[in-house]
Image 1: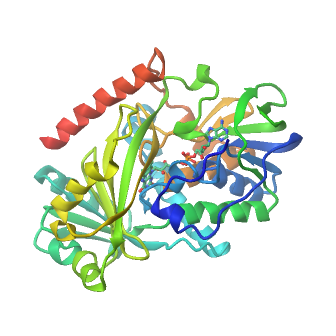
Image 2: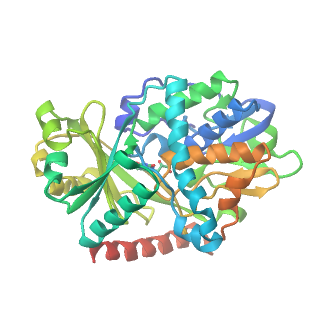
Image 3: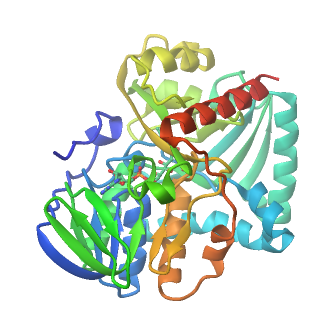
Length: 424
Ligand SMILES: Cc1cc2nc3c(=O)[nH]c(=O)nc-3n(C[C@H](O)[C@H](O)[C@H](O)COP(=O)(O)OP(=O)(O)OC[C@H]3O[C@@H](n4cnc5c(N)ncnc54)[C@H](O)[C@@H]3O)c2cc1C
C-alpha cells in the first residue's frame, strides 16, 4: 500500500494533495522515470519541455521522500567537487562553478513560468563556530568576489551577528543572497503539475519492482509494466532496485527536523529580521530558517546507523535552545525525518549505466539545486549531449562490499571521524 506523507510541517501546509492514478496494464513511452522526488520530477519536466513522451512512477506520493521533507535551504554547489577536481583537473573548474548555480536558475525560472507558490525567499548565511571556519569564510568571499557575485555576498563579523540572527553563538558569517529557502513539498508538487500539464503521465502508488535491460528496457510493477527507449532511476536512498549496480554505492542516512509554533512579530524581528536560511560550517551541521508562517524550522544531527531516534524533538530541541534559549517556552508542533542518499566520495550518481539506463541520485545532503541540475543534465544526455554528464560519469566511485548494513556502519564510522574533526 502507498504510504501518505510523513507528518511534517510541509505536509500540513501543502497546497494540494496529489492524486495521480496507479499504473495499470502495459504502457509505452520515450523515457520511463522511477521515483517522484525532485530528481524524477525535474527530469520529467526537463524532458517534457524538450518534447519527450515521459512516464513517471512513484511508489507512494509525489515528493514522499527527502524532497518533501527537507530543510528547504537552496544552496549552491554540490558534493564531491574536491574529488572531481582531483581526478579531472583544473580544466573543469569553470564548469563546476557554472553547474553549481544551474539548479537555482531552473528552479527560479520554473517558479515564475508555472506560477508555483512555494514561499521562495532569497537570503542564506553560513556561520562559523571555530576560528578556522572564519578563515574559510574569508577565503570563500574572496572566491565569490573573483567569480563576480559582488553585492550578493557579505562577510558578517561576530559583533554584527546578534543583530542579524539574534544569537552570539557564532564567530562570523557569510550572507549569500543568491541562495535562499522555500517550501520543498509545494515546489515539487507544483513541478509535477507542470509536467503533467505538458503530457507527462504520472503514476503514484506504483512501485517499480524490476528493470529488464535491453534495446527497449521494460520496468515492471505489481499492476503493470512500461516499455521505454530510456529508463532513469531516481529512487535515491529509498530504492532497492538493481542491487548489483547500486549496492555498496549509495547509503541512507537519517536526517531530522523540528518546527516550533509560529513566532510573534517581535520574536521574528529579534531572531531573523532578514529572513535568512542559516547553516553552520560543521560537517555534521545544524541549520535553521523561518517558515512562511514564521515557525522556526531547525534541523541537524544525521543518523548513520539506520536507527530513527525514538523522539526527534528530544534530540534536536536542546541544540536549538543552545542557540536560542529564548525559544524555550515555544511548543514544537512538528517533528519528522527523512533519508539522505550518501555516496562515499560525495560525487552525485548522475550517471549512465547502460546505453539507455541513467541514474540521478546520491547528493549527500545537498539536493534541492543538484536534483534540478541532474534533471537538466540527463535531459541533455538523452538528447545526445554529454558534456556535463561526463563530469560525473567519469568519476571513479568506492564500492563498499558486504551489503547495506555493513556499508552503513562504515559510513557511520566515517561520520564519527568528521564529527570529531568538527570538535577540534
Ligand atoms: C531531513 C532532510 C533535510 C534536508 N535538507 C536539505 C536542504 O535544506 N537543502 C538541500 O538542498 N537538500 C536537503 N536535503 C537533501 C534533499 O532533500 C535530497 O537530496 C533531494 O530531495 C533528493 O531528491 P531525490 O528525488 O533524488 O530523492 P527523494 O526525494 O528521496 O525521492 C526518491 C523517490 O523515489 C521513490 N522510489 C524509490 N524507489 C522506488 C521504486 N522502486 N518505485 C517507485 N518509486 C520509488 C521514493 O518513494 C521517493 O519518493 C535534505 C534531506 C533530508 C532527508
